Length: 150
Image 1 (cartoon, rainbow, N blue to C red):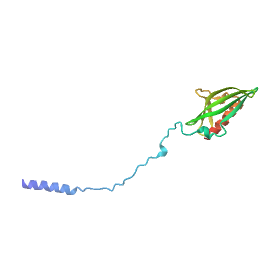
Image 2 (tube, helix red, strand yellow):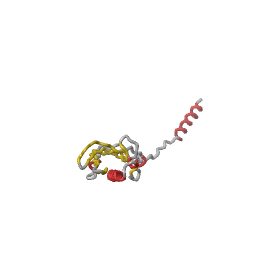
Image 3 (cartoon, helix red, strand yellow):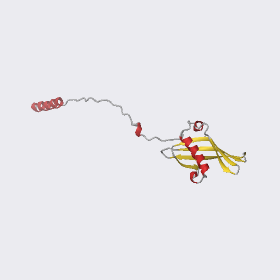
Image 4 (cartoon, rainbow, N blue to C red):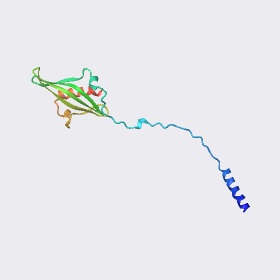
């Protein structure tokens, strides 16, 4: 029985002697996310005063003929994604006398190249670029070119 214990102890010693504790050199590296691949959600920026950035290009006038003119003056501009919502104070003149004042809002939507896709009344679906008279269409387009630069 003594020889069995000796053999058993030798096997255990050989087993433990054969096991080397290997310590690997582990390099610690920081994982830095690639922010160019993270999608960014655009929300309306309440901190930017787009109206102030328009400077002197805040208004335009459309002649409706027969002594009638309509003056659009931007009073609020909000940007959401690739569109701007502009609230106008609209002054209607007849024979150069102010006859009516009211407010209207329009959404100016752009393609990825900065060209105007549509101009719609707030809550409307019809593109005004398809229905406005040519002179009014040009005035809205010029205003739209000014706000896309903001």
